[in-house]
Structures are given as C-alpha cells and as structure tokens.
Length: 152
Image 1 (tube, rainbow, N blue to C red):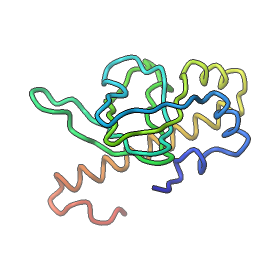
Image 2 (cartoon, rainbow, N blue to C red):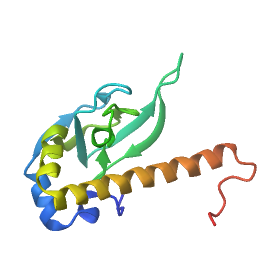
Image 3 (spheres, rainbow, N blue to C red):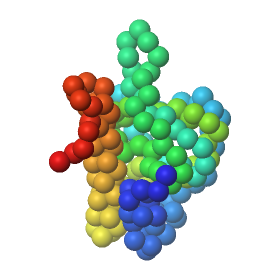
Image 4 (spheres, one colour):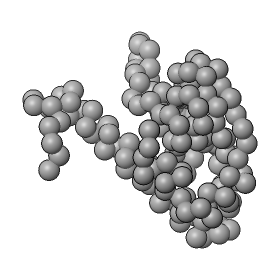
C-alpha cells in the first residue's frame, strides 16, 4: 500500500537517514504478538514484508481486528504520546520482517534535534489522523443508515 503516511513519503530524506541509523532488523512468525493493549509502548516498527493486524480486546471473545498494515507502514504510535501505553494490540498475520526502533532512543534524538523531532511528530500525527479517519469510515459502514457514502 502506498500512502502519504509511509516513512518514505512523509519524511524528508535527511530525516529518514537519521531515523534509520536507529533501526535494527526484526522478524516475527505468523501469529506472534508484537504488543498488547494497555502495556508500556517502548518501541515501534516499520513493516518491510508481511502484514500486521491491529486489534482491540473484546471481553469473552477473540480480539477484533481493526486494521491490517503492510509494507512501509508504521506499526505503533503510542510510544510518541503520554502515557506511552499501547491503545491497541498487534499481531503478525503473516511472517513479518520489519525495522524496529527503540522509542526512547528516537525520543532522545527528537529532543536533541528539534527539526528532526518536528518531522517525526508530523509523520506520527499524519498516521494517527489517517487511522482515525479510516476507523470513522468503517464505523459509518457498520452503523450509519446508508453506509459511509461520500464524505462531504
């Protein structure tokens, strides 16, 4: 999926290079839980291959999948905002290869370099905005009398 919120589209080249200096490779088998709703958010990922489901706990049932993320997409934004707790859970739907980032190291870099910090904040803000909009459309499809239709 190509989106204005992928790292390559949202961050200027110089900031991508700076961010990637903090990356490490990570791999997850299908079915692996990357994070759990309500726990401390201390890292995030950018998917290289595979897909990750974002899900929400539902008492007495399996977690409800809210969204699936793929190549180039940011997995996790809760690390950027206090109280730094995961708002959703995340599970590898398929085998996943990703770039993993230590949130503390990225936040330290943001504090030390305000231009970099602003670029990261705008990127994460775009991701949150896009996902909230997508959730709104899904809710309209489920609960509005005439579906989501066109957005005016």
